[in-house]
Length: 186
Image (cartoon, rainbow, N blue to C red):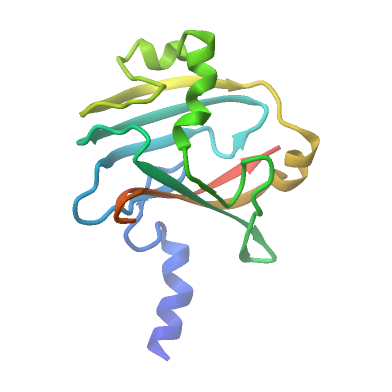
C-alpha cells in the first residue's frame, strides 16, 4: 500500500527520480562509465515550447574524445497520449530513429559555410569532427520559422519524452546520453 501511495504522490512533487527540474523541463545526463560527451546544464524556455517561434537554449558540458564518423545516434521520441508515452515513428529522419552517420545532418551548415551565430559567438562547432573541449552555451535564442503539416499533427500540444544516445560503432558501447521531458505547443 505504501508503494502505491508513493507512486501516486512522487510525480506531483516535481522531477522524476534522477532528473533535474529546471522549471521548464526535466532532464538528465544518462551516460555511464566512459562517456565521450557529458552534459551538466541544459534548459529550453519558454514552457511550453512554441513551434514555430523563439526558444532560448542553455547548455554546459564537455566533449572528451575526438568525434567523427565512429559513432551512431539513437533518438527515442515519445508523445504522451491518454496519459501513456507512445513512440513517435521515424519519418523523414525525425522521431524514434537510428542514425548510422549523424554527422551528415550537420552538412547543411558545412554547405552554407557557416554555423548559427549563437554557436559561433560561443566558440561551439556545428560540423564534424568535434574535438575535446568544454561546451558552454549561455541562454541563446533560436527561432523555428515553421514545420511541416505532418509534424504539426504529431507535435500538437503535448508532453514529450526524448532520449538521445550516442554509441561507439566498433564496440556499441554507450558514449553519451541525454534524456528530457518537455512540453511542445504547435
